[in-house]
Amino acid sequence: MMDDSLSTTFAALADPTRRAILERLATGDATVGELAEPFHMTLPAISKHLSVLERAGLITKSIDGQRRNCHITATPLKNATSWLNEYRRHWEANLESLDAYLIRIQEQETP
Image (cartoon, rainbow, N blue to C red; front, side, top):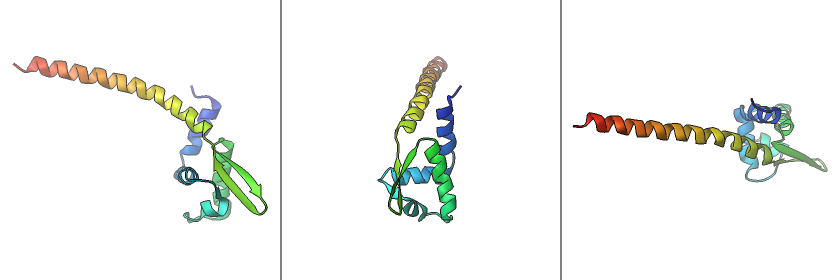
C-alpha cells in the first residue's frame, strides 16, 4: 500500500500540464507568468496546478516583490523513483526468467 505522500506525488504527476510544468522547472526557476506562457490557460488555472504540485511537495514558491518564483523540489520524485525501481527489479527478474524459459523451450524443439 502506498503511503500518503507517495499517493499525493503520483496524483500530482498524473496530469500532463503538471508534468510539463515540472519539466520546465527542471531547467531552472520560473515565475508563475513564465510557467503559464506555453499553455492556453488562465493564470488562475495555472495557479491551481501549481498549488497541487506545491501540496505534493514537488515545488516550492517564493515571493520576491511582485514576482512569485517557483522551484522544483527533488525529494518526492526521488521517493517515487525508489518505489518504482523496486518494481522494475521485480519485473526485470521475471522477464529474465521468462527469457531463460523460452530459450530452453527453443533448444528442446530444435533437433
